[in-house]
Image 1 (cartoon, helix red, strand yellow):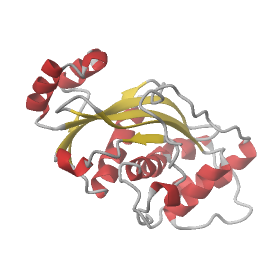
Image 2 (cartoon, one colour; image 1 turned 90 degrees about the horizontal axis):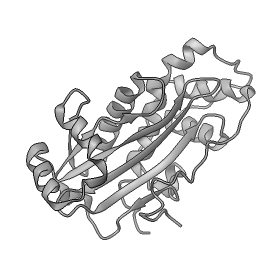
Image 3 (cartoon, one colour; image 1 turned 135 degrees about the horizontal axis):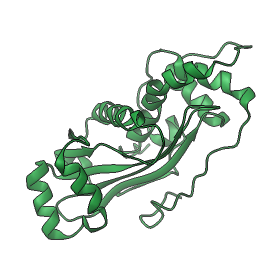
Image 4 (cartoon, helix red, strand yellow; image 1 turned 30 degrees about the vertical axis):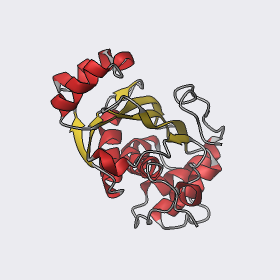
Length: 232
């Protein structure tokens, strides 16, 4: 069963346990530069079908334009906020559901949104936001955790609000841990190539450099959940 609105934000998914001996295979997949596979339904392509809420009664294409707020960062790695936001921007655009405009952290509107996040659904604020951001939707969230080593891991809490009525249209809270074998397989599929047998572990410097590639993979999985699965 998919998450309900109430379950979004409770952190039900925990990072998979793993050992350092699996790091090499996982990180090789992250660093590999290959052809990105085509988008399928979430249930078929990336194992995300049970990890998000999507309002089945709302067509996201009717939003027209959505403001993507640069992600709040609860980790100790400041650069990951920009990298993850940029990756989301590109991957969500590929879904061709709505237009996007990014609200960066140096924009006064960004701080106001973070400080008033609990009251965003007040109708008066919604009207102001629509006019200020010139958007009908608001995509925002937090990087709940990030670590580049001993194995790459990132956690996200995201939601998409309709600025017309304040309704939650989509949301998720998930952790991607490279020590998890299912994540390793999905990374391989994303990059369209297999990992050679006997690949040795990579050092910590390469792990940090690979963060952009890992963000692309995560953003690809997130963006795919915005589109309703096609009926057979």
